[in-house]
Length: 274
Length: 257
Image (cartoon, rainbow over all chains, first blue to last red; front, top):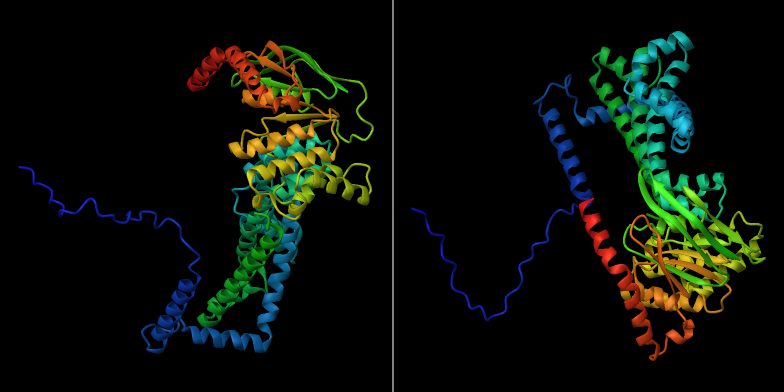
């Protein structure tokens, strides 16, 4: 036998009552404060675990030990030597890869011939982990800085080219038609319509390529470098200096955050119209 | 300067869109083009404005454009086609940057276009900060800045609410009043067609052929009077009777597509 639903309490339908609000949720805000609080809590717990001896400092040094390691590295000058070496490699590789990626991406976005040729090569080569090419690049370019920079440039190039031509493809066709209807020359349409229209996608690509560059510099430095954050982390790992190892990881994290912030600033300046 | 549609036919692949459409827009004349959905009105306008090559026939110009015209055939787009990263002023200036005008002359042209469209107080605003009606005013100001001989307007009011449509219709009537500028006006709205046009070209359903060309024998100033309302309504009914059955067929065709 079916159970009867409980009867609603009798109410006076003639009395006005508020309409129930049903529109809450599905609009997550920034939540920055909660993020900082969570980070502080994790660090505090981590520190407590280290200080109380709950975890072996060899496996997981306390945050204070990592801070001390970073301080010592900074005072000794080794930190700047490693950071500078990595920055030069990342900067050079990223610039070369970005420049070539923008040129090829624009070509693919604007020319049928370049699209036909470029897409074939990009589709074939993009999935290859670029670090796998480092030995080959060492063979071609020697054991100096060039193969490391070339590895980063290759990684950055493909992602940039893809984000640029995707951005060009996403520029509303009506804006291009509008410019053509005013007899605006081709180069001006590229500079004043296509480039700014593709910029959101290009800057989103920069965010990805910055991470790719960071990943590749560490990998390349682990394979063959005396200086650089990757080389430093590897050396520290080999010597079981986990406080220094994690200091290197923190530096990488700070570097990633700084690049992310820089791209935020760039977006705020260049995409203020959105 | 006259604009001539000469036996224009167009196909998209196997789909015949236009079939031997011919008519002339005389200097200063306003010609509206109406017809059922999908009859090729916008395609025809793109061909007339040189943005699409017809499969057959041609769009031709006869006579010299006004000496000061920087772009004799100028579009006003349904979706405004404003550059979102440019201010109102920069959008209006956009087609002038590559014209043979010095900075001072360019500024004067932009100022005049802003003044004529009532946008002087909004020159620094971005499109996202403007209402639909104001955005279309920017589109109109940009078109006026190049001093066109013929405006090619592709349903310029269809994306707007009825009050804004009415206000912009008044603007169009004012801008076209002196007869120095002609227009081809694509619309679904028969009321707009009879209020603005000197002639209305009625296209059949796809492939669009000219079904009839209806001449409106009243000045635009006369059409604003109460006495004219009956006549305009009768013209609207006449146009609707030409379109109605095919509009129903076209709608069913769209639903089954």
